[in-house]
Image (tube, rainbow, N blue to C red; front, side):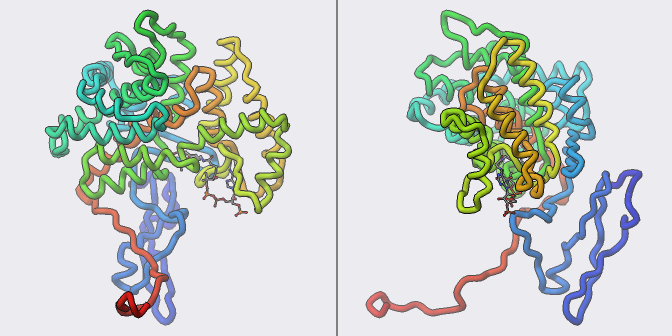
Length: 437
Ligand code: SDX
């Protein structure tokens, strides 16, 4: 740990004064100078624990995968700025970077691509699971169910102690998450399943499985493939967000990768997290349908009596622009122009952004557009239905979840996660027979 610009506190101690006593605790300094107080010995030596609602001030681990500086709007995967990767890389190359820690050589990329192709077919018996789902079932419920069920079909892979087990499991998850997503979409439309085509690359294969017909292959446009690939790349990892922390917590118990990722999918589904991209589109549609220019909606959001939030705005870490939102917004404009499309919801989004960014309510709280604010506009232009938006987020986040699982698997020091609590319930009391209550 520790880069060249370690601040003066590196290697020093923090002093906590607790009543009559005081304790010194080690200061930990990260590569980019972030500082933490290591409280590992706090309870043993003082009886105190710390309390931090939503873990807003608490680091759960040390990680070498992604760096975010929320104040400066910086996001780097394994040290590479997201802007450079978005411009020059592709989703599968970034997936390899996140999981393995370095950009792949030609041979490494060819091998990874081959692994993804060899593992793109779902076990044929898994098709029957889809028959049990109603066509109205939310695809995120289907995704987490089928991913978890995969462990029933590959029991030989569940022993993570073999490197090749991890590689095959990771490849199956990365590759088959597309197949599961496409099958869930086809089920919702009453369409026959389309098998993956081994000649297609990652993102074009998903478009093929979602939108081709048995008698008419989908017209794969280069700009649409690039736009979808960029969405996946921009969602690939984001350090200790809610769903990734969930994956890490489940991994800390020694559970297999399928179980960890299925849990991550459930956490991502929430509207405050990955489900926000679907909520943004529903919000934009509502504003558009009502004929509001956004002003009434903004006033409603600011009224504390309402529980309505400006979806796609705000972030626990970014107190400046989310760099991903900037990239997606620019790419949305390019995609709509390339497809000769205009989207009235894009106009609504841009009006909302302008109003919010000049309104003290949002400025004072440092609320800026996040990754979800414009991603839905791009997915709509691609033809992805709103109900599938969060599934697209999950496909993008898959390599990040896998990378964090591997970071725990490879760590000799990892312990099971087991937070403490402060109990605020009843004092001791004794059982009362029912006829005396
Ligand atoms: C993602 O963590 C990650 O990295 C996540 C993610 C990733 O890549 O994994 O980046 C992906 O989940 C992006 C966020 C998507 N969610 C949304 O867009 C939902 C809308 N945003 C919020 O609900 C909220 O901003 C959160 C959940 C994103 C962050 O919540 P926090 O950090 O707990 O902030 P908070 O709820 O404590 O809000 C602080 C204040 C409150 O006002 P006051 O009590 O001070 O008066 O800001 C207000 C909130 O009411 N506020 C908003 C708001 N977000 C915060 N008010 C209106 N609209 C909003 N969107």
